[in-house]
Image (cartoon, rainbow over all chains, first blue to last red; front, side):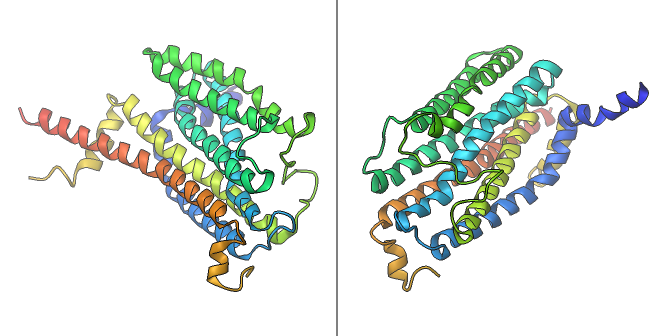
Length: 258
Length: 58
């Protein structure tokens, strides 16, 4: 029995704002560095070295930012729904911080996926926008993000806002499999998935390797930006606690001169 | 290398406008997402510094 209790201490420790702030501060520079390296390597490779597509020519190079943005937009939502579950079940405060801080980043990534998709659609399909299942379900994802942001800001009481946002995030997760399988369930202009866990990509390695780099880079970027936002939010929420006061005193020391 | 000259690289075989506008937009979104939180953090620290100065001097 005692052993079982011991095993879960790390989980609760991670949920403590102080431990989170210390750990994330050490992790952040590495995530940022990995994101910068992976994205720049993938983009240079994809733009200048990957061979052109035999049908789409060079417009296909938009894939190196479109696919990572779209994957991240969906992963971010799933993460928020998980944070919602953790917040509702275990009442961890850090889960609500994660949910609130991830929403704007997810919204930006959805906008980026929709915009780069529109720019890609013009030379490929001859139209900026079609009311296709994939595109429409991505648009709904954007509305879910905007709804979550608005809901989080509209409710004054932090605990109530956390509960409402958690429920909305969990209910909205139904949209994710719809986005994923939309290209199979409905007739669509949109092409199928580039990566799958069970099959080799249909394109040559020279084409999909740079995409793998930018996808990984975007995930690192998301991690770094999320931690950046969460660290500030934790400081704000815990402003009265002693460790925040001590941390701020340390941060502000050089500026508080004579 | 997939292109023989820099001009060819820029024109992207008639798709230059689309490719470069998509990448420009991407760069913009990434920068906004980094600079926004950094500025918010700086504002917060400045605000706290002011508060500490106010409260520190009786």
